[in-house]
Amino acid sequence: MTNARDDQGTLLPDAQRLTRFGKWLRASSLDELPELINVLKGEMSLVGPRPLLVQYLSRYTPEQARRHVVRPGITGWAQINGRNAISWEEKFKLDVWYVEHQSLWIDLKILALTLLKVVRRDGISAQGDATMPEFFGTAKINSKTEPPK
View 1: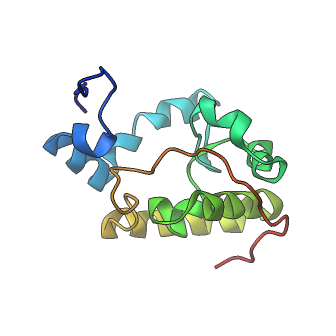
View 2: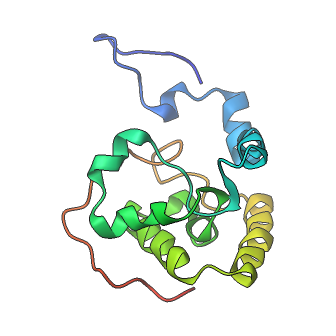
């Protein structure tokens, strides 16, 4: 990604700063490989809700914050059920569903389906964005979690 800025010195959106090589890295998911170091250090798991920006912490509803009950992962339930092509609210529902239902079987299913998603290059980015638009919070969220897809 470049450091391209507008006339006021603000960084341009990711989609405008992403280089051709960066787009290829994102599409191939090779940009995720350095996170294996965090797994080896015990800071992350292979499976769990994806870590998000620290600036989002104060923006979560109490229900959304439940995603932090488990260790973050390289891949998770939200990644195999839409990745960046679904809304933030849907991602959080799926993350909380995972927290409530995690098991070895679900983790194995997530790992297998992640490989398919990577090969098919499904859901790499939200429409109109290089990844996802910034999360600014949710006004209201249903406290019930969705059943598995």
